[in-house]
Length: 308
Ligand SMILES: Cc1cc2nc3c(=O)[nH]c(=O)nc-3n(C[C@H](O)[C@H](O)[C@H](O)COP(=O)(O)O)c2cc1C
Image 1 (cartoon, rainbow, N blue to C red):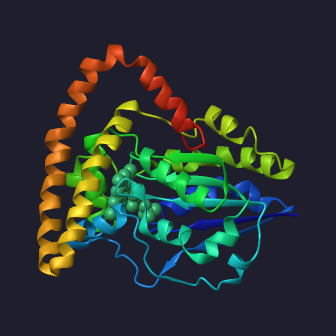
Image 2 (tube, protein in one colour):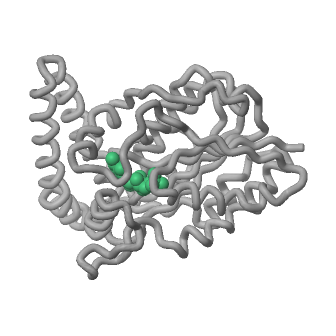
């Protein structure tokens, strides 16, 4: 009997639906004991989000400050597993606060130690540096990352920015913004076809050999990589680092100062998306003929499970 634990958190249910599909064959197999653990926060984030809470989540999210969790004495967390499937979403270019908090909890130390882990990401499209942070978190736990599956919104960057914000603020994935924009989030087709990863995971779970897991997942298009988005992600991480530290410094003076700087950050974010990012895109296109090697190196790296 192989024991597998799926750990997840999902506000809209999108990531849970993806995870259910990816683990379908494991659930159906009589030789696999599959359990699900839903990360529970002492004070959960609202869904749909209000604008204020959405932006106010930024400093702690980016600085990877953990929040208090419930249900950490769940018996599921006291056992050891042949495989852990860790499903997470990206908040502000970083593993979401629920995901990060769980991995920083005491219970994670024994749970993850020397255990193979497959990560599943369901996000808008910017997951590259978040997965680097995830690799570091798993390394700190002595876990063994053996696979990564990423599902994103395939629409162009600026379209998905508009549609996801609309979705996050009204909570309804079936509503088109202004009746014109495409549906937000990961397409139903991509969610449904994520079942294709299930036999690959089952095969490696049964053999107990995960050496070729990621290689086979890549052949199934598990990590679609866009070098332009890697560039934006890297630049944005530098800028977010500045803003996150600034807001947290201001908070030490007063909560009013924090609020003021979070507001300034929200304006800056709009400026970065609508003004800076198109400029970065033009620079990227101009440099394109000279960056083939770098782009290929980036693709290779983000397909791998090892940390640089
Ligand atoms: C506060 C917040 C910040 C987000 N930041 C990012 C981000 O930096 N990159 C990204 O690709 N998606 C981002 N997303 C989208 C999420 O990764 C995710 O796709 C969405 O919240 C749906 O996940 P769910 O399964 O929890 O409902 C963000 C969402 C929220 C709520």
